[in-house]
Image 1 (cartoon, rainbow, N blue to C red):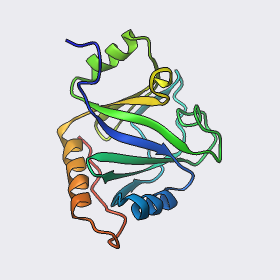
Image 2 (tube, rainbow, N blue to C red):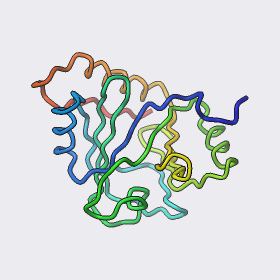
Image 3 (tube, rainbow, N blue to C red):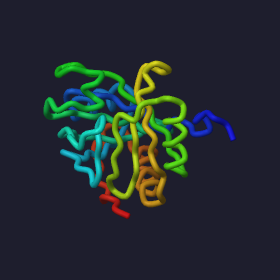
Image 4 (cartoon, rainbow, N blue to C red):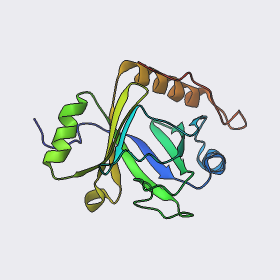
Length: 180
């Protein structure tokens, strides 16, 4: 078995932004990304950031551009977070890439064994996710994201909405929250 995680293609690029709606409009107008599903003031079931349970107030937007999921993250407070690790208040930019993994615990242990720091781990909507500080390799964080069937179904629906979406259509889509 390879010691690399490249057997999993990147499925997501994530950007830390100051305004979700403005970013959605810009990416929709310039690149044709969309429609987007927003998750405002997202809460997790379990959470840690650098050994604490301190969870920042963040909102997300998810949409597609071709085969890649685009995620926008907006932090509403000054709580220490993986986002504030890279960007001060008022700054924005590229934050992380993500891979979907089937055996989450095995891949989590693999990243630890390679010496990467688990900066944030959470469980929400029936899915495990962990962010590793891989900036020394790729200049950003890398997210491991579990792939349970309900979340794969939701993202397939979001991707299909993108395939059918046309400029001028509503930039937002409402998909039911998936809880396994």
